[in-house]
Length: 113
Length: 115
Image 1: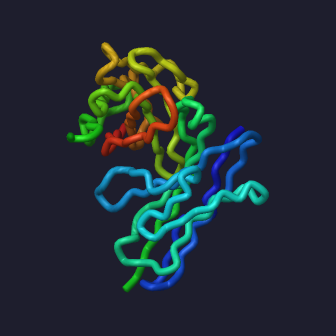
Image 2 (image 1 turned 45 degrees about the vertical axis):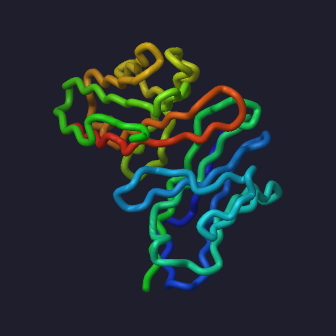
């Protein structure tokens, strides 16, 4: 069965420090991995997906199939990065199969001044 | 464009009552999803509509939950009768089409409290 694990419920860092939010997954096929973010009093929104290999708001994430991980990283955290971050998995997306998302528990990131 | 809208934003009902949640997707979006987050647990998929058809309803907890999507536009999720464990935040998401990758856009959620 597909599963996404985010081991940290809360991550607290100081402004300017590097941040890494961990995500591990289990899926036997070719997964599609996503990071979603929910800022305070806002709705869930896509931050980035592994296929696009983009850097969004300074965040990057690399899919490591050997370690089944998709950790989210940013070299210098900003206070406005404080939010809830969710790692999610799907499959067959680019083949046009717009399937459900399987979610991790989420990590609350607090960036302190 | 208002994005995905959900109504109500909050609902407090007693066990055994009925509640109907509504989701209006972004205009023209064929895919509509329902998810639920119960406190302390992961966001869980409930079901997926493609236009008016149920594509995947594998996440529906039991037959107390009934989802419809009239004419392929808005969707309703009815819980009857509600139980305490149904409390949580119900999210709706929509995405555009059936070809290639289509980002899921989320509504603000409906917070359901069953007393």
